[in-house]
Length: 308
Ligand code: GLN
Image 1 (cartoon, rainbow, N blue to C red):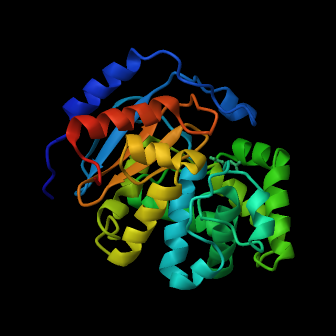
Image 2 (spheres, rainbow, N blue to C red):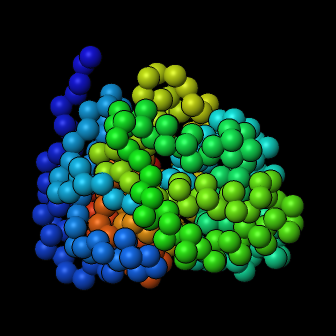
């Protein structure tokens, strides 16, 4: 196997140094204890090149809670199975509202705006659950295979506290079920969704797992998960909806398809070039990593590697 040299390592080192000098990095998520306990100032960033060469800076091998980053992978896994029928059950427009908002659902007949707000992700997980009988297990298997890391797993403590603090997600699921847009019993769906959110992985793991979107749908083993057209679509939805009500600002600053999670991680795709993952737990008021967005902003500025 030919591996390339770590092309962007000097840039990552420069970005990490600049970020290290930036004060005011937001606050760790505090809705569950396991996330609140993480140091807001931790920072790691990794690049995975198309051939699987992976490298990084800072805490790039430190596992963290993937949370909403997993929404990209469940979307891809479900799209691969059911194709365009999915879009009859979830939209693909930015919501302009917080990730856990209920407000648009009533006006839009229980059809969430996009697959990356919680309501939309619940629909996607529900549909994947119907098709596989084990949505979270399917997701974990995919992440293990793509990252080459068989140790990736759920964090049972995080999944349990998500359940205890899950009233809002339960409300979203029940509300959509009242419109007939949820297939499985709500408790079954919520268990799958909370397990999904609890997956723990490092920047290295998640950059590698995101690589299929830089490879126009091709998995690590060379088989195809998505048609090239579908990879384009997932990347487009990431660009427009991946950072919730900050997606416009993220596109403006970073210029790449990206998806954040409240664990402080963000994945990003440079189609045809590489996949990235950055992690720093300090969040802004919209739930996106402050240092993570800043680092991606610097990376695309220094390399000219945006989709624009
Ligand atoms: N577990 C979180 C929730 O469902 C995930 C949200 C996120 O990462 N933005 O509220």
